[in-house]
Image (cartoon, rainbow, N blue to C red; front, side):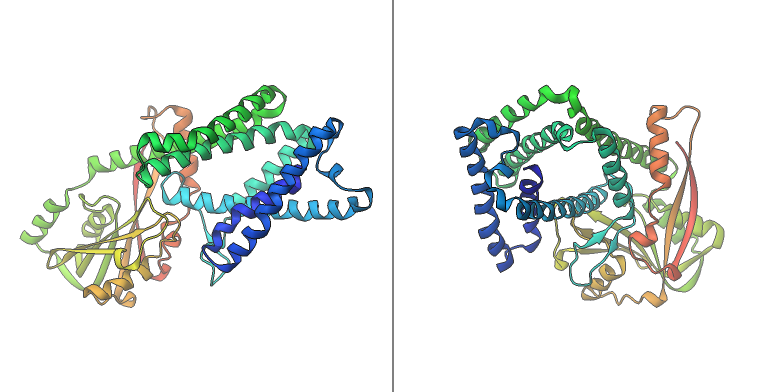
Amino acid sequence: MFLTVTGAEALYADLGHFGRSPIRFAWVSLVLPALTLNYMGQAAMLLARPETIENPFFLLYPEWALLPIVALATMATIIASQAVITGAYSITRQAIQLKLLPRLDVRHTSESQEGQIYLGRVNAMLMIGVIALVLLFRTSGSLATAYGIAVTGTMVVTACLAFIVIWRGWRWPLWAAALVIAPFLLIDLVFMGANLMKILSGGYVPLLIALAIMLVMASWRRGSAVVAEKSRRIDVPLGDLMAILDKNPPLSVPGTAIYLTADTDSAPASLLHALKHFKVLHERNVLLTVLTANVPRIDDEQRVTMETLNPRFSRVTLTYGFMEEPNVPKGLMLCRKKGWKFDIMSTTFFVSRRTLRPAAKGDMPRWQNRLFLLLARGAADATEYFHIPSGRVVEIGTQIVM
């Protein structure tokens, strides 16, 4: 029962990728009624024949239809597994964009579908997780205890998020949003409360997985904040640096230099080290910041903002939605509409590479510090993540003691 119903639910949920296309409406008109009839049919049979509680889905059908239904359940399981994999990739990429996880290598497997991606590390973790669950529970009956808490917990979280969307996103009054969501949330809480009785018999597994993911995200956010704070202590205010360069201008070389930075108020570490070691400055220097908005997508007209700081320095900000892929060269091409003729062949990108070292006594607990350092070592290279041609990049390293 769980396999087929879950496959239909996963397929129905995955229809969001089609937007408002005819394919979406065609599938909704087929899947939603079929799923509703399936649930109602099982409920009616259980009321009439309580003994069918052992396996209500397969007992719905006559004996001659059992093998075709098993084949259908197998195909639905494949659909469900593919939906889970696709959802894991999509959610991971969004978490990276929202700075909840370190950068990972995201590979695009389609030239026409932007959301068709592959994350090798996520795929490997899913494989290890599935094997571990099979070895731990051994039978589908034992796995049902963990499944129940996972599903009902998801339903509760979804209801809470729907309340936030209606209240904060759609700007409904608080009482109106609560009035709409309260009946659904109450039903979900009843289901979840009933499943909480199964925690000791296997329901603890999804709770432990959720806790582990929360610890990873919290550690990454905390560690990133500590690194940013330590960087600010040694950074030079951008205004002070430009004043010094105006009084004592270094040797000028032709071309454009783009310095990637997350802090718009301080001079990038790569710029300071370039001046210290090379003792030259390009004719045109751009401080580039890539931001992630709290919306899925950003129109190209709103993606780029440019600001002239002085004749030699300007600031460019590229903004992407959390479902978009940050492609710096393509984003800079949009600057042509604002008067800057960007030519990548005459441009050099300067990227700061931070090397993190553990301290005897850090700003975080030792276990959290070690976890953050492990995550940071496994993060993807900024050059690949932002799709910057490797032949146009100069990386300058700095060390930070955590």
